[in-house]
Amino acid sequence: MNDFSTVLSKVNDNYFPMIERQLTGNGIEMDQYSKSCVINAISAINSVLDAKGIGWNDDQLDKSNITQILIQTASLKLNAAASPREVFFQVRNVSVKKKENGKEVTVWKKQIEMGIEGDGNDAILSRFGRDVKKVGQFWLIREGDDFTYPQYTGFDVKPPSWMPKGKGDIVRVVYPIMKTDGTVEFHISEREDVVKNLLAHMNNNMMNETFGICADRYKATPEQRKQINAKKSEVLQKAKGLGLAALDDPDLQQYISPAWTEPQSRESMIIRKMRNNVVKKIPKDFGNAFVELTYQETTDEAAAEVRREIAANANSEVIDIDGEPVQEEEPVPPPAEVDLEQGQPDGGGQEEMVYGNGPSF
Image 1 (cartoon, rainbow, N blue to C red):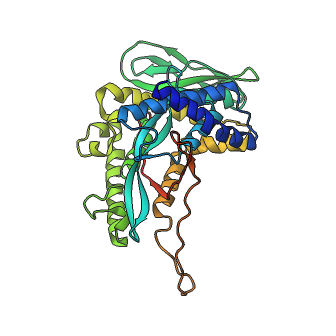
Image 2: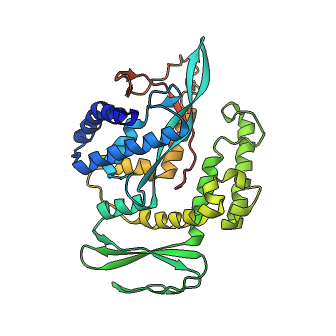
Image 3: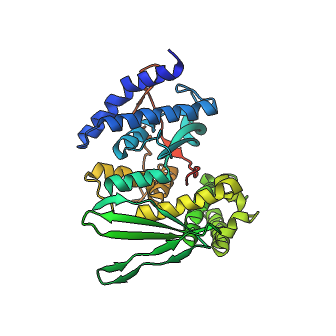
């Protein structure tokens, strides 16, 4: 039996019971398709680890979030084996704080990160969209095409019209959505709106940037933090003024991932963001609070940023409110994960996650 088959069998033995118990405990039945999604996620994660030369039981691999990723995959029914892909996985660096010889030190480990592709958002909309009967094929409108916007008069809607010419950049995306009552809605996203996604991406990539003001943002003084924030604001304001032309600015490209800037992937990234901007704003009914929370944790970039800041600053300083000495407590480690190769609990430590955007963000 090869290593990959061994990994899958051990995931089936060790991870599936945990995932199924948690889903069942939250009122979710794990059907066959959900199980297939988990298997396909494991296969995709295994490929990513192989590409990085990392084994499932490698000391540098942090396994503390793998169960959560598999739960998200199962509850949202995202298929990593679908074509086009609905979900992707990548390896990110995380800094883990631990104590050695009585001192707190930071060590870097590798952690799996999950992201939803454009077609994954379409699948979620088709499955959980509120009163959505059918999600039509989206329109990619080029600047040279003949296009008229829809017109609204009370409850009456005059549909948009589109005559493709095949010339120019794609400037907007239109999603026809058929509702359960037979009506059709048209949701539109413009190319200019992607600038907001780019600014969020740059802000995320600058999370640990100090601009040479200090060596480590976690050790920065209050005055240094103000200088760093002022510099970040200056960079973001420049990018906002340039719009998507910021992708070609040499001073700004250091804060932008290659998936945005490289000519072969830039247009695909912009289209994907336009599609996401449409699909994410359409109301959804998950029918279960746990699934809704899972979706928000996976897609809400603002909430993710808050969680990263909390993780970065948690237990970093003791605040003495009453003026009395306060004894700092040891941080509580997260729940143990199952070691895939040994089948034994693998203890975790308090983590601080450093994220960046992947090929689909």
